[in-house]
Image (cartoon, rainbow, N blue to C red; front, side, top):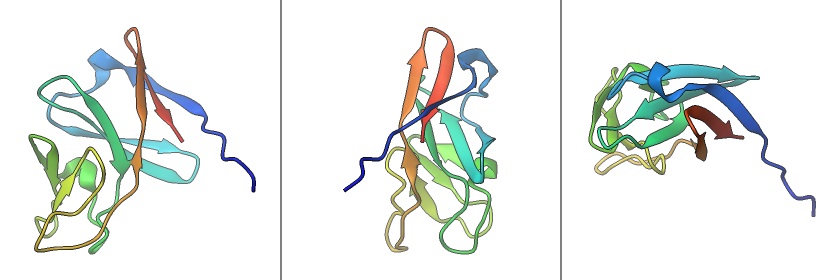
Length: 106
C-alpha cells in the first residue's frame, strides 16, 4: 500500500485573508475555499457544495459553518460535513500557519 504524501502549498499571508469571508484558492485541479473564522482559525474545504455545486467561498460564514449561496445548505468549514436535514460531505484540508504564512496540505 502506498502512503500518500501531503504537500504543503503556500496560499498567502494571514493578513491577506478576509475575516468571516471565503477566499477561493486553486491548487492544480482543486478549487479550495479558505475561511478565516472570527476566532482567527483558518480552515479549508472543497469549494463546491455537494448539492448543486454552489461556490462555497461565496457563501455566508456563521461561526464554524458556511451557508451555500445557492440553496442555503449549512456545511461545517472544520470537517466538511453537511448539516441535517441535508446530507453529504465535502473534502476538508489541513491548514498550517507558520508565522504569518498560510499553507494548505494536500
